[in-house]
Image (cartoon, rainbow, N blue to C red; front, side, top):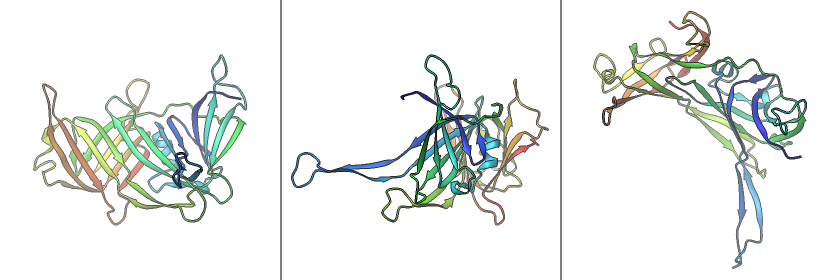
Amino acid sequence: MAGNYLLHAIGFGGDVIPAINKLGIDAKGTLKAEASSGNVYPEHAHLTAQDPVVDFETAAIGTAWRLCGLAGESIADLSGYLTLYQKKLASGGGIAAGASHRKLTARKGIVIPQQLTVSTREDASLTYQAIVTYDGTNEPYTISSSVSVPAVAVDSERYGIGTMQIGSVTIDKLNSWTLDFGIETFIDNSGSAIWPVEVHIKKTAPRLTVQITDAEVLAAANIPLTGKAAAHADTTFYLRRRAGAGFVANGSSVHVAITMAGQAQVTQPFDASGSDPGQVALELAGKYDGSNAPVLITPDTTIS
């Protein structure tokens, strides 16, 4: 029977990722229909490939990162796999009761973080992508109808923009920043299956981009034109946990701290028009320091 559905939380093994704001399930199929032998119309149409991916976004940064960090997670290693719920709407009402819903289960592949972003007066968001592969038996998405959706904890996890230091330089007048995790994958499409059979991470090159309105950041004593080295010990930026009005106290262990090592530069020293303040852009390219990953994210911490 036809129905309209909403997104729900993401089943991540035996856990649940709450505060899902976006969910996109894509089969990424390639259909071919080519005319041959001088025919006007194609006489053969067929599916040659599908490269299924799932993209989702959550505001529950701490919860999600504890489950899936920079190294990603193998779906096959998750007890219960990756489960995508679709919550049915009741005719003439709200959410349908009981086992009225649907779920799509992915059994093999990898889940990787894509971007962590925040703007002033907005909530931070963390995006992930799941690259789904063939397990040798089941289709990439196993579809189940007439199921119940899992209970989800109260949606109370939200974060705003916090303070930032790069190379011991305090970055003032923050407007927004985006941390792109820069994860590149190799997808193995060998064999006769229309679905990929393996996926591997081949490169992780995080990059932070920052938008501010403080033109004084470009200075010999701050970040010179040739840039500035950054280390985990002197480069930290925070996401502040929101309270009902304002933020939770800095001394409470509920915030998120991010440190990076690499090289920073002011990519756009000034860009202004009319009577608006000039915009300044910075970038920090992450690197391996010999001991630590280029970026370290620590939930449930204080702000110092």
